[in-house]
Image 1 (tube, rainbow, N blue to C red):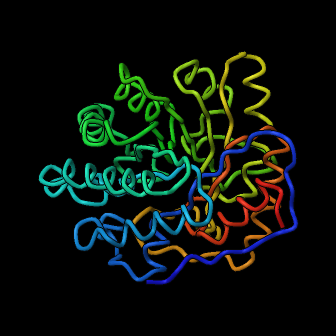
Image 2: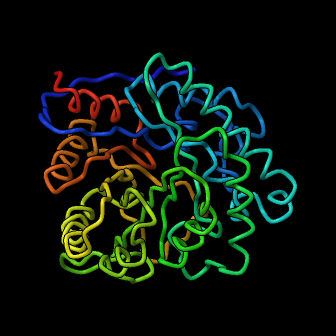
Length: 313
């Protein structure tokens, strides 16, 4: 199994508390040789050989991640299909949470586990969100992971209605909720908005005090600076004790008509660990206190963030 690649960079963030997340689980599984294909994506390793998932988590912990996310992103009807989802989703999501918990507990330092609550009906496709079917599916994912996780992470949220379904699913459970939204890549000028077309101020108003952190993820890193500016302004107008974070993907620019699960996306060659740290430094200067990586951001990128986080180089 391929080891994580450790790097050091000459970037220091200095004062302040920065939390470093892990990177993209799916692409890390593919990199180390785990069973991996469409449409099952990262869920295939859970079904065929869960030790690969443990290895991927360990690679990110070795790189310095302080929060690892359960490998439940593809444990949804969109990736498994309706029949297999109803047959095995609870089992697979519980396994994902158990594996992450085991790795975190053996880390030798504090590592938190985030329970993944992913898009149910397709990433980047808010028009496919089914508000009638979502509550049961999210409740099942919550029930499968509760007891093994330290916080909830709603990931790649494309619309306010999707956030509301996640919020309702974890209501009454005494754990933090981090809400992570994905931004539209194909917009003109400096505008930032959710993939549903909803604005950042509308998003902040909808979240209210129901999340302890608002993040942006799974968009190109260039998209987040304007989004962060608008987010910080909106939070200033609605004073709340909410942390801010970012974890970008390394995808090449998607075609406007791209649909998730159609193909494996190519990665950018210019987004080296050093370059990614430069983006992170700008995000932190704009108010982010949580940084990590999404699709295509591997342990070497997380090692670079960790080196910067602790001022080493």
